[in-house]
Image 1: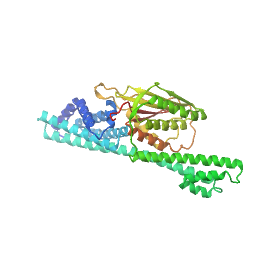
Image 2: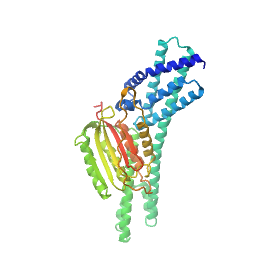
Image 3: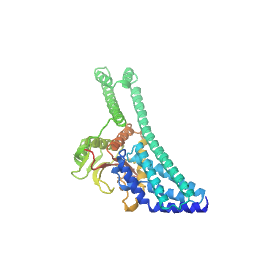
Image 4: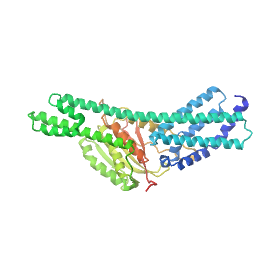
Length: 436
């Protein structure tokens, strides 16, 4: 490019920079008017803007570039930032179509900004205008492609976690078949197709000539396997209903503190059996709106997961009003003293949640003095040994159910863990809903 074009683009970049806040405000306003976008209304400004201010920085750097290498570097950084934005939107519970709608509104806002600049500065050469429009078109298309691609990859990771669980089901079934190959050759076939028949066979076994000790052991093993498979299939059915859109939320006022205390009391026998503490902390009353059945399901899945991974120490369940994110939210934290994500066996779904949480935590403070995102959830010191064991099955499906329920309730799901620390899941729920 000639010197006049380079100077013109640099001047344009500076004018766009000075109008940064106006551009972001208009983008948020346009998104708020879009009936297809509901999740954004429950985010603070910092969470909503996410990586977009950084993206605009890179766009301005591209316009100001004097060498091709500088321009190329700025474009590659834009792609990386766009991919990170897609990952955070996945973690925040956005649907892919909502991510695409946001990019459309951002593109139109920037197009209008260029047109306004042209009207205000008619002296700008046509070559400068054409170069700016071309850069904007590439920014928008690359941003949409990179965000959507990252979002799709995370969805595939979530699906891979379910495949891993199904593979574990097959392994579990094969172990049962090997244990009882001689006595239960025909029963093993029924295990694959009919759980009810399997329970009837357990009753018949009570009248067999098998030695008492072997019969008791076999019954215990058989019942455990049947109960587990029955619960797991119920989980798959729940996940299928959620993914098919058959689940609906029923919003009503309820006391979240009473619900969570009741859940902890019902789970305390399990924690006592495993010699783990189970602590419930929070205000005595927490009046919120939401779907109390689905909130309980989220908390129950996370608590089951924490108790399963924790070998020593225990689990803390904490609820509170969160006043740090700039919008009306309440949070549920489930903290454990397990070996932590990097040391313990975890599902691909958990890794995806951890990476997305880290990306959101790295978001820069929004322009205009807006407070940053909520600080990371607390984690307790690990008290569980790092020992090799097979990943417990069902947890990938359980976390997928939790994430789908969070999406249904306009809630965000975070996962925090560090070396030497346990694991914390935090769910940020809206305090109130606009629907009746």
